[in-house]
Figure 1 (cartoon, rainbow, N blue to C red):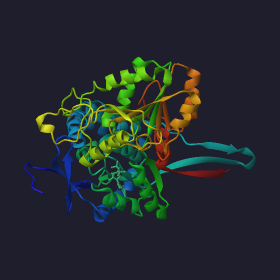
Figure 2 (figure 1 turned 60 degrees about the vertical axis):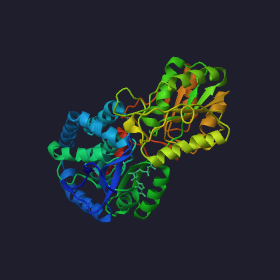
Figure 3 (figure 1 turned 180 degrees about the vertical axis):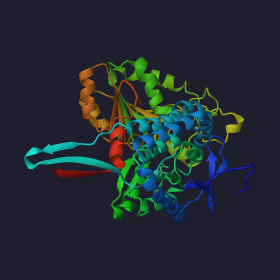
Figure 4 (figure 1 turned 90 degrees about the vertical axis):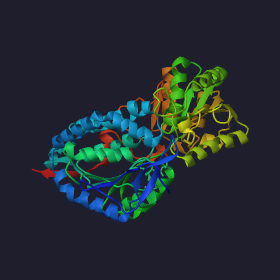
Length: 487
Ligand code: ADP
């Protein structure tokens, strides 16, 4: 393909050095549709080199004290924060997300991930029990596992990659990371800061490329005993299969089909703007986004009217414009897939209340070929419809009515996923009952996306296996040993 402008060319980061690759793939700017970057098309050979570098660095890194590792993580956080604006611009351009979201959510959270695990690693204690009658004490000791394989997706590129790298290296592991081939730039920028932060060569290695080639080579590598993956359920199934012969330890953070349940005593002045945000933030490309809204029948029409009016206030357009709320979707194929869901809903007799196919989408001249779509609200859709069952991962949300508490718990649980749910009600007893009844790894009541990183994050059912968080990540990224001493 002919490229008019000079392209950004990324290189793998192996053993503390940038290494060119023998072949490359194109990466698109989703807001213009232009190729602007070339990403290494790594395979077995590159993964082998990265794993070797990580193995070589392991004895040095794992023998450092938690305090020494903590200081390096904090330094890295400072360096990313110093370049926050450059990282935010790059993330917005590479992913299509708004510059505002990148500035206020993605990059600050990446910084916080390093600071959080730099601190939490200093506060873990292991267990000890005594058996006086036997003259024994037992205690547990925890040690890093080895080379961790980290595979991350394209929706929150640096945010989710650092959510894995930070705990992995804080615990003393070395890593080989494989970011999404569609959003590799900020990971590459971070590699430029590692040496300055004081990280020894080989502790963090980043291999760029596609999932089926680079990702699978990492999953199948016999010297990578642990894989932390965030992405689709389908890919997780493949990773599980491919890692089974090696009995690898897996942490799988997958998709969601997250319900919001709005009872008739909900404070709609809080609920409506938050539920619009939970449906459309980051173009709906967050695994925690709401995509099924159950509203109690008595307030259903009022809710719909106010919800649609609020959704229409969200402006779609050039992501680098700070007044824009909805940027571009990740790719042309993904945009097509999301649009098709709306078409299917329409064919099934659902009503499209705003957005796709209903309202005009006006884009600036430079963004005409970008992958944009308006926030879309669908009503009168059946629970069995694919729009109510499958993860759409775009700016599309369905609103349906319900009558009773018992009924709504059953319907909210009636999907294969179980990641996050929100419950809106002023009745404390009801909020507890519903939260307990939901099959969901996270339940937010009267809020959304308020996270305490100390606590477990992860999903049930097809939304994942394992949890991550201060204690959970520590347990995942370390191997425990029980030692008994007789005196
Ligand atoms: P999506 O379907 O939303 O693009 P994926 O699950 O395909 O999400 O991608 C998440 C991450 O998993 C990306 O880094 C991708 O390259 C990687 N990946 C995809 N397929 C595989 C695979 N077979 N083995 C390992 N990693 C993979």
